[in-house]
Amino acid sequence: MTRTRRLQPARVDDDSYVWIDDQETFDALVERLVPADRIAIDTEFHRERTYWPQLALIQIRVKDEIYLVDPLPVDIASLAAALHGPLVVMHAASQDLEVLERACGTIPLRIFDTQVAAGFVGLSTPSLATLVEKFLGKRLPKGDRLTDWFERPLRETQRTYAASDVAYLFELHDLLTTDLTARDRMQWALDECELARVPNRPSVPPSLAWTRIKEARHLRGQARAVASVLAEWRELTARHTDVPARFVLNDLGLVGIAQRAPNSAEELRKIRGVDGRFLKDGAAGRILEMIEKGKALAPEDVPTLSVDQGPAMDQSLRPAVTLVSAWLAQLAKDAAIDPGLLATRSDITDVLRGAPEARLAHGWRRDLAGAAITDLVDGRAALAFGAGGSLLLEPRSVPEPPDAAEPPDIEDASATD
Image (cartoon, rainbow, N blue to C red; front, top):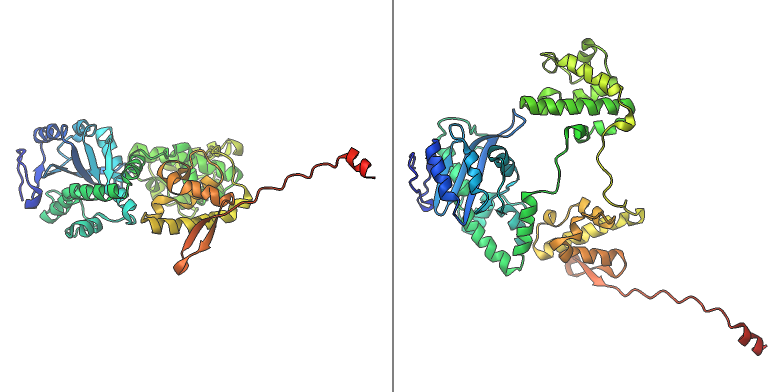
C-alpha cells in the first residue's frame, strides 16, 4: 500500500491508496478535485456517544486515484470548494451528507447515489457489496461493522476496507447510467437523487421533540405539557453538551416524570427509569424546574405538529388504501422498481386525500402510477386477476348518469285528453 505525504497518484487497479494526514497535502488534493468532472466520496464516523456525528475518516476517489484523509490532524472544511463543481458519486448518501455538512458547512450541489439509482433497475435497497458483486463480479473485503475508526494508526485491513468503499463507485455509476438510459429512467433517478440530497423533511425543532417519543404522544393534559417541556430541555441539553439525548434522560424516565410530576429529588429517584446518572451535576434541580414550567403550560399551548397539510381523507376511501397498495406492489414488480422507492403507505394516503405535496401526484411517480390511481378510485379502471394471480389494471367504462326526466308538456297532455 502507498502511504506518503506527497500527492502521488495511487491507481485503483493497483489496489492502492494515498494516506493524507497533513494540511498542505490535503489542500493540494482539493485543488485537484475542483476541476474534476466527478469525484466519489464516502465517510466513516461514530455517533454512539455523541449527539453530532464525529468524522473519523473520509475516502475520496478522483479519476483512478484513491485518497484516505485523516480528519483528526486535517481541517477538511476546504473540501467545500470541491463539492460545488463535480458530480459527487456516493452510496447510501444520507448520513454522509449530514457528516459533510457539519464538517464542511455545505453539501454537494449534485449527487449520484448508487443505492437510489439501483432501485430503478429492480434492486431493493442494495448494499454496496451487493452492487459490486452483481455488476462487476468482484467481492469487497469484509470489514468489522463495529470497528473503531478513531484507532490510530488504522490497521491495514481497516484502510483497505475503507478504500474499497469508493474504489468501484465510478464503474457502478457508468453501468447504472447505461441501464437507466436504456430503460428511459435516467431522469427519474436523477430527480430522486436530488430529493435524497435535499430531503423535503424539515428537522423537528426542539419544541416538538416530545412528538418523537411514542409513549409521550399518548399523554394528555398536564402530563403532555410536562413531557413537552422536558423533551425540549433534553434535546437542547444534548446538543449543547454533544451527547445522545438518552444520556441526558431516557424515554422511560421522561414519560414517568411527566405522568407523576414529582416535587422533589427524592420523588424523582423513585420513578422507574430515573437513576443517579440523570440527576447529577445539578440536573435534578433543572428537571424539577422543567416540571414546574410544564405545569404552568396550558394543555392547548403545547406545540404540536402542523396538521395543515391538505384535506383529511374521505373515510369511504379507507378500503382503497389496501387496494392501491396491492396494485402498486404488482406495478413495482412488473416495472422492476424497488417497491419502497415507488410509494409508502403514507404516500398512498396522501394522494387519496389530495395532499398538495403527495409524492404520487408529482414527477415520475405521477407518470408511472398517480394518474392510474385516480382512474381506479374514480371508477374509470378496475383491478382483475391475471395469469399466475398477478393484478391487472384494466380500463372500465363508466355509464353516463341518466338525464333527469323532462317535465310533461301540460298543453299536450290536455290536448290528448
